[in-house]
Amino acid sequence: RPDGGTVLNGDILVWNPLLKQSFELSSMGIRVNPEVMEKQLELCGNNERKELIWHKMLLDGTLPQTIGGGIGQSRLCQFMLRCAHLGEVQHGWWNPAEVKILKENNISLLGLGEFEE
Image 1 (spheres, rainbow, N blue to C red):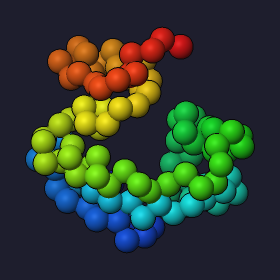
Image 2 (cartoon, rainbow, N blue to C red):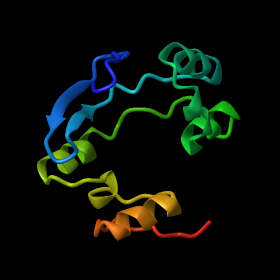
Image 3 (cartoon, one colour):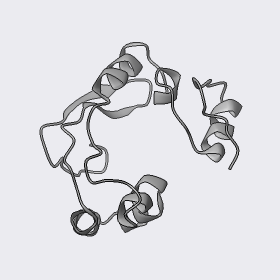
Image 4 (cartoon, rainbow, N blue to C red):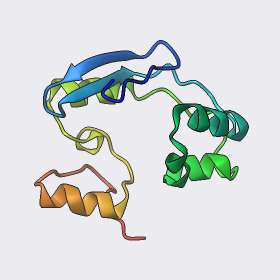
């Protein structure tokens, strides 16, 4: 990994020449609860991630603890098709600010990626 960190489970990482960084093809989906996430973020020195939408929703109890893993096929497609963003191969909702940056770079997302807040 570029940051010198380690993974917590049996993830499969490859080098992505398009993104010029390591790229996770599969996630074994460690299930975390808010207490475990707090500890992991602290141990990794990534407390700023508490402000990311998924992290916030898990920490405040909006999301169930069973979310995790399951995106391996989309990640493999993204890697094999040399796409810069997962939204090019997987339908989903994406942060409008991120969508704007992607549009400016001529990256088109599938589906609902352009909803305004």
